[in-house]
Length: 405
Image 1 (cartoon, one colour):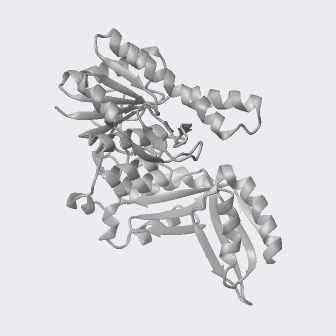
Image 2 (cartoon, rainbow, N blue to C red):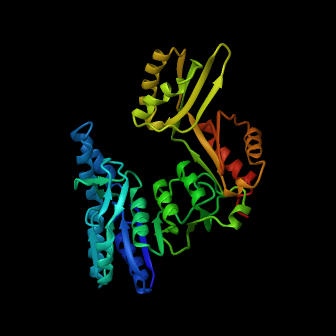
């Protein structure tokens, strides 16, 4: 008998018919002799509706009350799933985040899991129950409801799997695995049977939306095998595991893109110690994440500094930097929202040379100008004009021999 944790996203439980279909899949796993813990998201669209309702009451709702409100979405799905399983003749119990003892910090709307008390879940499993747990939510030390941020149900599932020492964590979604590129823009993209945690971390951070990045971090840290698959068919999906020697033989495993970034440039900044901190510290204090940073040295002890931020934070970041520019004596602040980031990723890059030159040559052949470059041990990213995104992805996919045969 294995212990399987299954997570189903909002589209998988979008209505009662889909909840029934998920229940059938759950009982098949149970009938195969396995213990099953099910983690559910809210029905698709429900979280957005709740956010909209709160916005109609108050322009800036209280963060604590928002978490109380948003947690109701998952409460609905877990109770309906438990009822469905019971109606099918199976013992089932639903649990909210606080009942499952998912303990978090007090960062409302984006809480981080600190501990999971798996005792109650184990007790219910021992009594023959299928345990249905609300994803996305937890409780802090003061007993207040917290939520984990967008995609938090993935993190809930992996954390519960780690706490229970589960044999496998299955992430069911509306796609049937991890692809070498977004199949919506690259028709020749193919599904990967296996991918390394590190590759998946890079993909998640660079725009691939199949898995939430914190869930992959948990899986790697606690060695939880992830199986990403579709809730709408029976096909095998993609296993996310520790890398092996065969993975390193493939130089590039995938091409990702992200259109949700903007860049900001401060021109003619005094080139002296501490200037970068003065530019970026106010951005950090505002809770805005910075991705790529490039500094160019000019003559006469002046420099240009460019960095990227999420497009949703572009307006706020520009206002901050205009104020900073006046304080440090920068000539001007320039902003650009019409950019995209394309990246090639692969653990095989550690032991193969020439990846960067091939990437640059491929983009050049398509007359695509590179605006910024950043690298890691297994990733190369280029910022380009947004209008060339699809062309760049398809060209790189072909250049690195990722196309379907």
